Length: 461
Ligand SMILES: [Zn+2]
Image 1 (cartoon, rainbow, N blue to C red):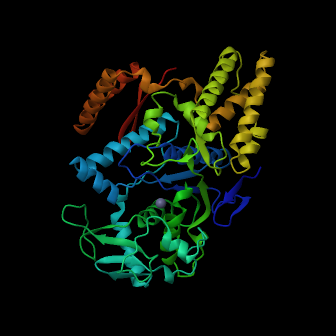
Image 2: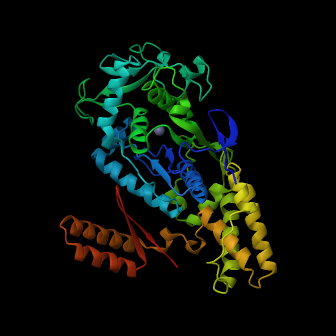
Image 3: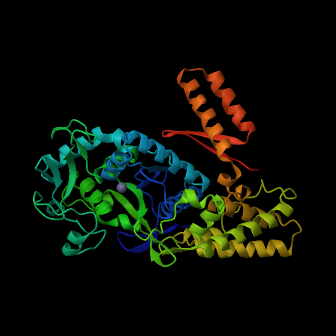
C-alpha cells in the first residue's frame, strides 16, 4: 500500500517516496522552553507522533529528530523577570514539556538536540554563508540577504509586501532589505553569548534548525514538520539558509523533500492569545482529563484543518474512551491475538491517505459497534482494534488523569527520590540508584532518563 502525504511546498497530495527507504528521516521544530506547553504545541507533537507511528508500519528504520530551543529573547526576558538563571528556566520547562507529552503518549524523539549544544555548527554554517555572500555583516550583526536566494518565498507563497508585514520581522535600518533576517547578533554583558568571528553573541532563531537537522539527519531528509504558523518566516528562512549553502538557486526539496504542516488551534471559535486569556495549557488540562482523552481530542479533526478546542470535544472523547475500555474489558483475556497480522484494512487505509484521522476514527467506532453486538470472541476484530489503538497511540488502560491521582505530597516525595537517584548516579553508586528505581517501581512510578533529566509516569494498570 502507498502512503499519501500532502506536501505544503507543492500544495499537492502525493505518494510518499523516501529519499532512502532504509533510513527514513523526519524533523520537527520543537518548543521554546520558557513556559508551559499549550494545546497548540500539543497538537503539533501528537500529530507528528502519529505520522511517525504510521511511517513505522511501512518502514523499518524511521529516525525522528525534534529540537529544543533553549536560547531565545523570550527566555532571556523570562529569566530577567523572575531573577533566575536562564538554565533554571530552560531545564525546568524542558522537563515539564517532555513529561506532559509523555502523558499524551507522545514518544520521545530519537534525538532531541538543544540549540545551545550546536552553537559551533551554527557558527560554521554562518561563516560559509558570509563567504558565499548569502549573508553580510552590518552593525555587528550577521544578516541573511534574501535577495541572494532564488527561491525565497516559495513555501509561504507570500508577496514581498506580505513578507515584510509578516510576524516576527524586525524592520531595521541596518538591513539591506526589510525581509532580511538575523543569523547572529551581539549579546550584552548580562545576556548569554558565545565567542564567534563576529564577537561575543548568540544565534538568531532560524539557523538552529538548519544546523541541527543537517548534523542529526543529513540533508536532504524526508519530511519537515511544524505548525502552520511556522511556515513564515521560520521555515522559509530555514530553506533559504540550508539551500544557500549548496547554491543560490538550489531547489528547496534539496533541504527537505516534503513539508508537513498542521493547522491552528482556536478556543471556542476565538484565536488563542495571552491578551484574551484563553490559552489552554496541557498541564492544567491533565488535572481534569486523562492523557488518552486529550490525545483523542487532538486527533479528532484532520490535522490540516483548524481545530476548535472546546469542552464539548473533550467530553465526547471521554465518552468514546470509556466505551472503548468497557467493550475491551469484557473480552480482554478471552482472545489470543498474538499470532495474527493484518495490515490491509479500512483503518490503515484512512491513515495512509494523508492521515485522515476522522475517517480512521469512524472505522474504529464501527468496529467497536460490531464487537459489542457479537461479543463472542471475534479474534480478527479484536486484533484489528488493538492494532488500531496502538497506531493511534491510545493506551486506554491509562485512562485516568495521573496528575489528579497523585497528591502534592506524593509528588514531592517522588521528585525527592528521583533527585537522590540522580545524585547516586553522579557518584557512580549504581546499586543505590537501582534500589531507588525499584522502590519507585513498586509504587508504579516508571522512569525515563532523557537528555533533559529524568521524567516519570505513574502506570495505573
Ligand atoms: Zn525550526
